[in-house]
Image (tube, rainbow, N blue to C red; front, top):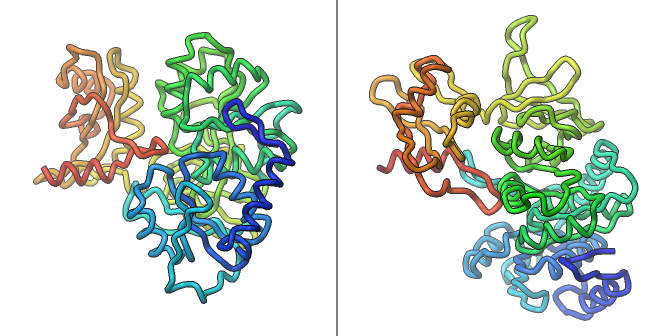
Length: 419
């Protein structure tokens, strides 16, 4: 049924957990209630989510490292009836909401907040079931392919695509707690016919640590576009690279089952029609990707290209585009050029403020010792128009990322403004 690290959980063990929940006062009647779940242990979180889904409860997913007082205030602000903190028996009710009723059971989560304030988004279990059906049709994994989930199951990607979709197609998901790359490599050896669900920062750690210890079969990436360095590094191993694209409001929108480039987002799921308004006839110009289904229209906030075969390519977040004296700079384009420079390990391009041109191009990089910012600028001047070349590049030991490996260019920009 399920496996957590190297420990299997059978159907009978899961049923025993459910009986315990039904004997617990605050979980006896979850229908119409919204629960905030903040768990460190995935073997505690997943069975409870499956129970609440079955019985008709709503859940708000929180990262397990969230401090208690933050988790409680967030749960209250999100309209939850109560918070379950680290153990299903530790329940902290919101007394002001006990009489309220949730009309339709949903999964709630906060958007990443990488381009502004995080917002609460809810999707019904019914909509998620439809997504899972469409997702499994698109992924089309061979029989016996074992899902190994290193992405956090407190996030919709790890939970829905890694766990729930696997269960729906009759596979036993192997869930790696704390994204332990050494343990993940051991499990990859145990299950040679596998698909690993991770975010780019996890796949990077896996690739760096692996060094041919285990043959990689299939890797699924999500959350942020894979960097060109990681794509090239993994491409040389013979692994099948896959990447899925979506957003909090819509879930998964498209899947590339065999990536041809690091910005390859693949084909839309059968439930979605995706288009981008191209302003020039006969040319593929970046425009906002808009996804429409029978019951929903979602403006993604992402600039992309819809190719003639219907496949999608990512260009940039709209809010990340840098306007230098009226000329547009897409961070990903500049990052690709700098990433190809020897000595550059990681790079992020973001907006700075300029007293004359309004915006300026800034960069933050992890580089080999001895490499100078002037050398990076010279590299760029030979390959890019001058207005796209970063005016400033900072060398750091680590580029700030969220728990799911996302870089917030907005936060980097605000940090620059504060300075």
